[in-house]
Amino acid sequence: MTDSPARPRPAAPKRRRSLRLGPLTLLWRTRPLLVALCVFAVLVVAFVRALLSFDDYPMGSADVVRTLVGGGDSGETFVLFTLRMPRALTAALVGAALGLAGAIMQSLTRNPLASPDTLGVTWGASVGAIAVIILGGSTGQVSGLVSRLGVPVGALVGGVLVSMVVFGLAWSSGLESTRLLLVGVAASLFCSNLVYWAMSWTQVQEASRAQTWLTGSMHAADWDRVGPAALALAVLLPLSLAAAHALRALTLGDDSARGLGVRVERARLLLLLIATLLACVAVSAAGPITFVALAAPQIALRLCKLAQPPLVTSALLGSALTLAADQIAAGLFTVSLPVGVFTAVLGAPYLMYLIVRRHREHHL
Amino acid sequence: MTETDHPARLLAESVTLGYGDVPVSQDLDFAVADRAVTAIIGPNGCGKSTLLRALGRLLRPNAGQVTLDGRRITAIPPRQVARTMAVLPQSPQAPPGLTVADLVARGRHPYQSWYRQWSSTDAEHVDGVLELTGLLEQAERPLERLSGGQRQRAWIAMALAQQTDLLLLDEPTTFLDLTHQIEVLDLVRALNRDHERTVVMVLHDLNLAARYAHRLVAMRDGAVVSSGAPDEVLTPDSLARVFGLECTVIPDPVSGTPLVVPIGVADRSPSR
Image (cartoon, rainbow over all chains, first blue to last red; front, side):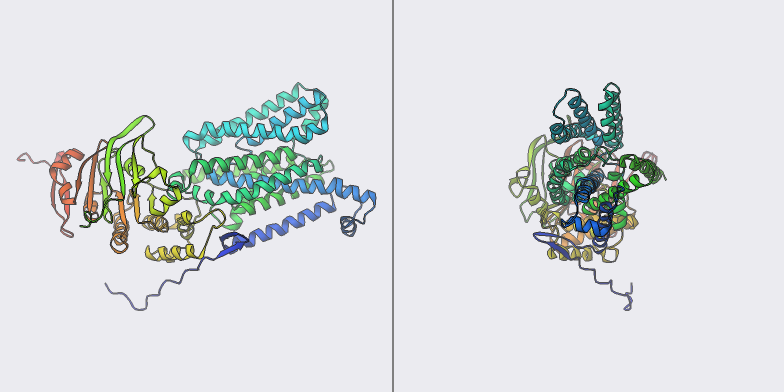
C-alpha cells in the first residue's frame, strides 16, 4: 500500500465558537442567527404596520409616532392605545406562544405533524374557556372578572387535562408513535364537538359571544388579555430556553438521552407542561388559532437548515405569521374575517402536504 | 491479557432483569473486566442486550444492583454516570438533517448545563474525537448521507465525546457489511489499546468477537454459560451448550484466535 505524498490533508475543522448572552453561552451558528435576525426584522415591520392600520381611522405614521410619545388628541390616543396596540400585542404574544409550543412538541415527538392543534390541547383549552363563557354568562356573574380570570383558568384546566389524557394514553407506545397523533386527533374531534354541542343549547347571546371567541379573533383584544399573556410568556420563554438543553439530547431517543445523563421522564414531563401552558395562554388570549403552531417551527427549521426546530426563531416566526395573518384577514375582504378562520384556511392544505410527504418518506 | 490486572469498576450483583413482569435474567452476576474489550455473545433473545442495558443504566434491575466504582449506579447523579460511562444503544435514531458535528457535539451534554450550553473545551473535544474517528471531512454532512460504517463511527464518536473510561456498545456492527464491521471493530480496538478504554459490546459474529475481544461472555436463557478468553469459551462443547449447534473450531489463519465453523444438518457426513 503506497500512500501518495500529494494526498491532501483534511481541512482543519471550523472551530465551533460560542455565543455569550450574559450568563448564557450557546453554540455559535451563523446561519440560524442571521435567520433569527431577519425574522425579527419582519416581525418589527409587521408590528409597525399593525399600529398603522386595522381600522379606517385616518392616522399616518407621523400621527402614530406623535401619539406614542404622548402628543395625540383624545381620538388618536384612544385608537392607538385602546384598539390597535392591544390587538397588535395580543397577536404578537399569541403567535410567539404558539410557535414555541409547536417547536417543543415537534422536537419532543420528532414529528412535524405534532402541535397543540393536532394533539388536542388547543381544543381542550377551548372547551374550558367556552364553558366559562357560557356558564359565566348565563348565571349572571360579573362578566369583567369572569373574562379576566375565568377564561384563562378555564382554558388552562381544559388544555392541561386533555394534554394529560392524550399523552397518558399514548405514553406506553412512545411519543414518536402514530398512536399519539391518532389519540390527539380523536381528542380534538371530541372536544370540538363538545364545544358545538354546548353552543347548540345555549342562548343566542352567549353562543354568539362564544362563536366570535372560537374562531380565533383579535377584535376583542384589550389590555386585560395582553397583561396575563405577556406575564406568562415572560416566565415560560426563559424556562423553554433552559429546557432546550435537555430537549436536544431527547431528540436522539430515550436510550441515548439517558446515556447522556438526562433524567428523561422528568425532562419530558417538564417540556410537555411548558408547551401545554404556552398553548393554553394563546387560546385564552385569542381563542383557538390553528396552523401557526404547526407551520412556524417547520418553516424556521427549513430556513435555518437545522435538524430540529429552533425555539426562539419559531417563536419570532409565529409572532410575525400571526400579525400578518390578522392584517390580511382584516383587510382582504370587505367583511373583516377573524384571524382564526384565515389561518385555518391556510392550515388545512399545509397539513395535507405534510401528511403526504411523511407518507412518501416512510413508504418509498 | 490485561483483564486480571485491574479490579472491575462496573459490576452487576445478583440482578434480576426483565421488561414488565417477564423476567429475562434472574440472579445474574457480571463483572466488567477493566481496561479490556469484552464481547457478550449468545443466541437471539438470550438477554445480552438486556444485560448491557442494565449495566448502562438504561434498564433498572427488578432486584439486585449495578454498581459503578463501588456505588450503586442509581444513587449516582445521571450526569456523573454519563461522564464515566458512555452507552451506545442498539440502532439509535437521529432526527433527519442532523450533521455529524452536531451529533458528536451532543455527546458533550453531561459537561454542559442549561446556562452554559457550549464552551471552547467542548469544541476542542468534538474536534479531537472527529479526528480520532476519521470523520473530519464528513463533519458538516447529514448523517443520512453517510455510509453505514461512517454513521456507526459517528455514533461511537458521540459516545467518545463524553470522555468516559467505560464504553458500552449494543450490537455496533449490526446491519453493516463485513468491510464496515471491521472498520468499526478496528476503531474499538484502537480505543482500548491506545486510550485504555474499557469496552463491553454485544456482538453476533463469533469469529470477529474472538478476534477483537480479550474476553468473551456466552449467555443463554438469561444466564452466563461460560466466560473467559476466546479460546476457553469458543469450544465445540460450549458452543453446543450455548447455541445448540454442532461446530468445529480451528485457529483463525490471520489472528490465531478461534474460528468457529458451524456444521449444519446437510453438512454432516454419514461417517461422523
